[in-house]
Amino acid sequence: MKGGVRWAVLVAVLALLLPPVAGRASAADRPTVRLSASQAGTGGSVTVSGSGWRPRALLMLLVCGQAVPTTGVRGGTDSCANAEGRAVTTDAEGRFRRKLPVAEPPVPCPCVVHVATTTGPRAEADAVLQVAGHAVEPLPAEPLGGRLSVLTHTRLDGSDGLLTWFGAPPRRTLVLTVGNVGTSPVRDPVFQVGTSHGVFAPQWEEQRWRGTLRPGAKARVELPVELAAGAHGAYTVSLRYGGRVLAEQPWDVGRPWGVTLFWLLAAVVVPAAVFRAGMAVVDRVRPRRTARRRPRMRLPGPALRLPGLRPAARARHSSRPASSLPWFTPDRDPGAPPADSPPRPATPTRKGPP
Image (cartoon, helix red, strand yellow):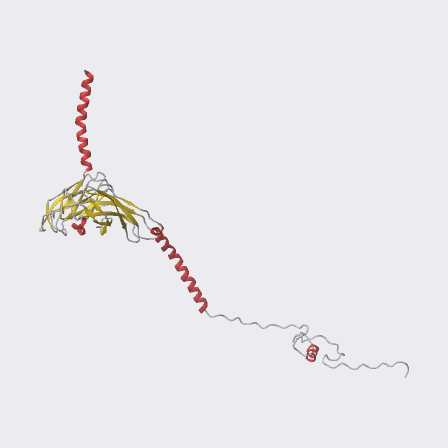
């Protein structure tokens, strides 16, 4: 009996504790947005606060038209006043508070303050705002017939190559599975693929998918995506059909370090080449200095035999005495004849008595 009472008490305690915990978990999973005023005029401002967002998440706040909080904004950010948007970062508990200027969106109201994450997993929430003085028109009816919906998570297939490392345009393929949830077939649907960088609005490009989707059928769709040359940073790839955004996929593009390496090499090689060319020009233009020949002192020596002279001239040339130094005169016997006088004839010697 005592054991049964204990179990009953334990079950009662768990019943009291579990619902609040579940309620807090579900509330934390749904981001919320609140406004300080539900109506404001152009030129004024409202204070936007929210909770239940991811901690340290970057959010974008926009005033958008043709929107209902339950169905979202038709036309995406093209229906919002993007120039007057504001960015805010949530705190460690996923809360934020930011003042937002009120501006007229490019389409008629009903209007909302649209808050969405710019990086990481997609999360968004809306709060109704009446823009005083702005036109209000009923939402256009959705066309009857075929209606496409994304059935699986999107992904980007592909990788960067060597050329991308040197600044070539990054390329990927957006892969997803769509299904026709309407009542009529969809033939050759035209999708709009948009790429956005950071908090900027996406740039849309129409791409036609060839095929027919009957009611209740599904198909795998592959659409090419290409960025500009040298693009890098955090990008978001969006897919839109019939004025509704069907899917968004983040894309982190690496920096083309090859371009940086090229400019570093150019900064070193080009000045060195210019310096060498300038030195070559200076070397050609600079006048040449002619060296002066110093007079050589000739010392007495043997006579040279010149091969081009005749034998008589050669003998006469060889018979000339070697010139002596001007300050040097060899000693001579006083009784000896001068060096330039012809030789004396020999005196005959007598033999025997006369």
